[in-house]
Image (cartoon, rainbow, N blue to C red; front, side):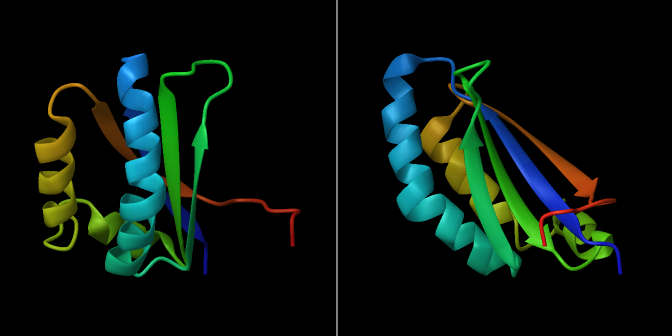
Length: 105
């Protein structure tokens, strides 16, 4: 099987929103999304080249599982919550990546 990641990228342009976003993602969003998605693991990063960019990665055993999440009933409540809390202040995008090579393990 080909492993995959669902990547959620968020642009947090207001420096005043960054601390709140970071805290919310660390304590609520990442653990909850891992559970709701059934991801094997998850991690997140702040860009060092563009301080407004935040990325969260959710790893799955296969591409089909990650692709099924997009537009699924499972992801809708998380999208609604994100929109309610962050509105138009934070722009978000989703991407499914196929892991084609991994020397780490």
